[in-house]
Image 1: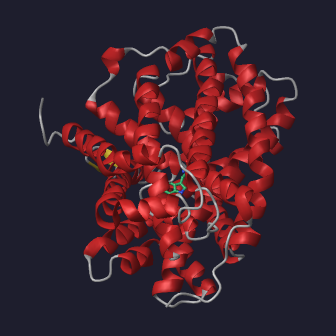
Image 2 (image 1 turned 180 degrees about the vertical axis):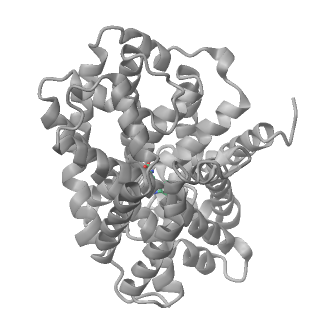
Image 3 (image 1 turned 180 degrees about the horizontal axis):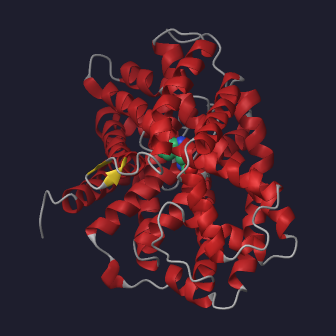
Length: 451
Ligand code: TRP
């Protein structure tokens, strides 16, 4: 059953780069600002940060433990560790989540390619804030162009996944991620020095406690799960490629801190500019695409920086999409016995078909709605706010209660060879705190329990 030679990441930096590559993506730079903007800014940030540490880090760690112990894909890991038990349902949910996430994610990733093209052709130059918005809206409501970009992006993802873990995923993540951080810092500096920027910082960092509601809590939980790439087994699959002597607690903590810092930096880059250019922070899906070109217009070297930025944003998105596609491919290869090539082709092309509907929901299908959400909105909302947190809940329950303390201790201390000072606390969080916190958010925000 187990393939003879599993690819592994080459050492400590490889796994951190790859896991951070999965975590850091459009979730940080596109999704975090739009969700934070819609949910009250500072209040949202506060809840989000607490969930990252109380729920996010322990769940990430749990995924690493499960994957490294089982040495299999997200589905196979549960089958192997709990034979004849229904826990593999988590794996199946993960595959479904992977399909839905990739479908809508490639819509936005395609937008980054169009924006790269516009940057290259100097398309933002001399346009007012209103004109930049109009350009964006006419682009996204079209059909042909956004679909072509989406398919190009899916093709790139498939090509890298085909190349395999070490050669493909690692190589790109290592070089380009640090460069992206540097560029966001440069742009943040420009943004906070714009006239009127202070209001944006206040919006992001000054919590208005009256804005904290159960709905905000659910959005924050969903965003935390989405941003850290947890809850669907992507990090179980990556965990299976982590070497046995890696200290998992350090890796999880470093990846989470890196991911969270980049989300906050993205906020510092976006919100001051939002207020400086009189843009509505509750703008929604299009927020960063409307704000960023405005910042470039106000920057020395804006032409150069805009090109570099959209290249890096597309790459950040790519290191995330490959981790999602890898979940599907590893499952197809190891469970359905396809070759890697066939698995990649089947996975990528079927997801692309669903993805086209997401892209069209900004144009011809914008009136097709369910529960007041378009196809895109529905995929985005249900995966982040339902599937991932629910997956995360089942994952900590599986590790904490089914596999139990001994397995956790064993994996976290690498069979007793290293010391983990916070081991006791971690076991307690995995068994009690994280599952209770997730359940409470679900029960209250979905109205299952009323205060
Ligand atoms: N975390 C990525 C981002 O922030 C998106 C992503 C990649 C993801 N892999 C995932 C989300 C797995 C959930 C599960 O852009």
